[in-house]
Image 1: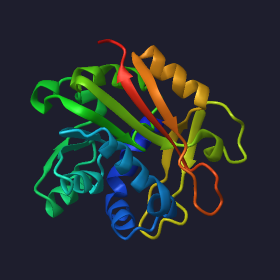
Image 2: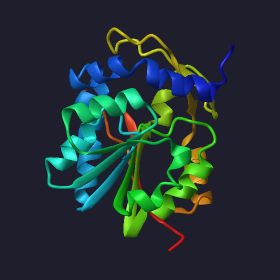
Image 3: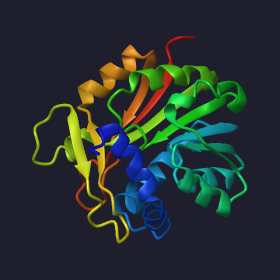
Length: 226
């Protein structure tokens, strides 16, 4: 039976869990190794939070990095296999939780000074998720989003919103299922965030040290609903 994009996206995270874990822990992904991992960690630490929620935490690398700095980090991910490997390395707080479940679990999760979505917002209908995040934010808290830079990621394609496919070429062995993801232009990102009650504080474009081209788009936002 043919899966729709959203089902295939979720299936890809489940099927490729071991490959993702190896790629992250062995630092196979150049953009992460040279640029984006340090960029998101540096941005979080600059906020000086006590509690951080890593939404789409994967195998838990960012939570472990934050814990090393004395920060209480909670990781949630819809992929049970990824949560299992995260728990196996660190006894931190990890929960199997899809984005649609975040609002229902808000009372259990508590409030956070920083919410992080690090290459985790890959679906098309993001407005409900972004609206639900307000309920997890502590007063004065921030939402940090790092995503694929729209100008770099467009490749040879046209510059407009639409589904693309990631085949993980160059990430190493074990990636058996391609991953559809929804491409957004910069204008589309900023419009979506404003419409869901988020106010942009700053925007950064971390550059590759050799090509000096933007690798990712990093956004710091505060709630406009408070």
